[in-house]
Image (cartoon, rainbow, N blue to C red; front, side, top):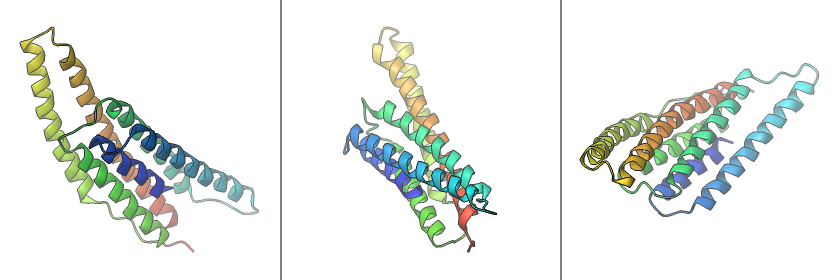
Length: 186
């Protein structure tokens, strides 16, 4: 399940660079949703077994996975018409994807979770870039109130920033919950 969420982030990085289509990203989201549903069904089976209880962290991981998909869907809708082009957006998405893949390997190996610094660094770079973009867009709006694209560009920049911040936090929650459910378990 974690790997399929990483695949969405990687595909979105390609979309942001103009190297992948929206359809591919949407297909990855559907696959990740199916993978999450399979985990949820397994939880249902475990609960029906005599004495069976699933680790609470698995439910937390499912909730976090849903939030990750929501964040990624937001980014798909924003990047659909205009790829991000420059800036750190694709790099942040690549860092999130790498973090999720590393966590998935850790879960398979039943290893403890170690947060990745690349995601935090990428988000910090993104914040600086977004701030500069927002200032530029606000200046454009002040210079020419009738400029139709500046307001939309400012909203788009803010939406990408918020979605990336949320994605970073939700990906960390997903990784921590998944590792908590399976690390060092028989």
